[in-house]
Image 1: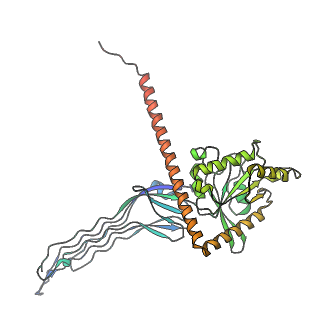
Image 2: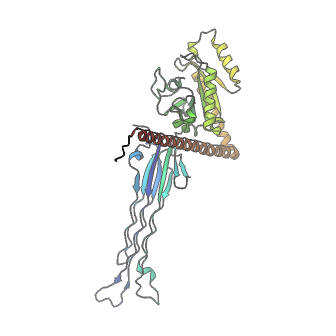
Image 3: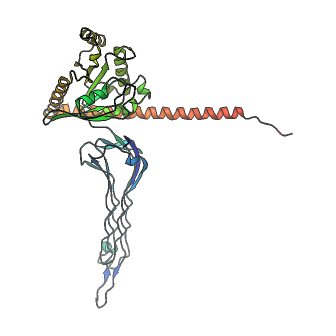
Length: 396
C-alpha cells in the first residue's frame, strides 16, 4: 500500500430536521390541538484513531465527506430520527488542522481517541412547542439548523520513541533490520528508503521501544532537496534521535563533514528538533582495520567536538547492537519516569513538541510557497518566449 502522510478533505455535518406543523384531527375526539413533532439532530463528523491503518491514502482521492441529515418531525408528536454520525478512521499520530483559520484542532495519539470536527445541526421545533393558553392553535415552527463544515488538513506523523537520522547509505535501514523485525529495502545505492519504516525493538519480555527510519538527508534538504524535507516531520514525535554516521564511506568523503551537514540541515529545518536529545552512532566499523578502528572513531569524535553519548557499531555484522538497544531502553524508561514524577518535565516536553510542530509547519508552508512562485515565474518566462517567436505581419 502506498504511504501517504498528508491529505486535505472537506467535511460537512448533517442538517437538523425541520419541525412539523400539524394539528390533531380524530373522529369522536372533542378536543384537538397542535401535535407537530420536532425534527432530529443532524449527524456529526468524527475522526477516530485506528491502529489497523497506517496511511492516509483513503483520503487522497475521496475528499468530500458528509454526515446524514436529521429527519423532519411528523404529526402525532413524532420526533424525527437523528442523523447517524460519520466516523472517519485515521492512523494513530494524525494531526487535524483547520486550513481556513490555520488552527490545530487536535492530535490523535492514542488508539480509539476521537475528535469531533463538525457538529451536526440542531433539530427544528414543531408547532407543539409554541402552544400556550393564549395561542392554542400555533402555526409557528422552526427549521433545522445547518451542520458545520470545515476544510481540514490531515498530517500523519509516525509514533516512535527513537528516530534514525543520517545521509543516504549510512546504514539506517540495515540498523533497523538488525535490531527489529522490520524488513526495509537495503541496497548499495542512495535513497533506497523512500518512505518511513517502523520497527519494534524487544530488549526483554515486556520491555520494548519503537524505532523509525526515514529517508536519508542530503545537503540542501531543508530547502527542498532530496526526500528528507518531506519526512523530517516524522521525527517530531520521537524522544531520541540516533545520528548514524558512516565511518568508511564508499565515495571516500569525510565522515565529519557529512555529520556537520546533517546537523546544519536539521537546525535550519527546526531549531527545536535540532535541540532534541541526540546520540552519535558510528556505523560500519567492520570495514576498518582492527588496529585502526579506535583511532579513526576517536578522531571523528574529537573533530566533531562531541561530548554526548556515542557508540561504535556494525549494523551488518551485529556488533555493538545489544549494548546500544539496552542503553536506549534504559534511557527511555528513565525519561518516562521523570515525566511521571515531575509535571514540569512533562509540560516542558509538551511545549517543545508544540514548538517543533509549529516550526515544521511553517518551514513546509514556506517551501510550498517558494515552489509555487518558481512555477509561476517559469510559466511567465515561457509565455514571454512564445511571444518573441511570433512574427507579426500588418496588412496594407
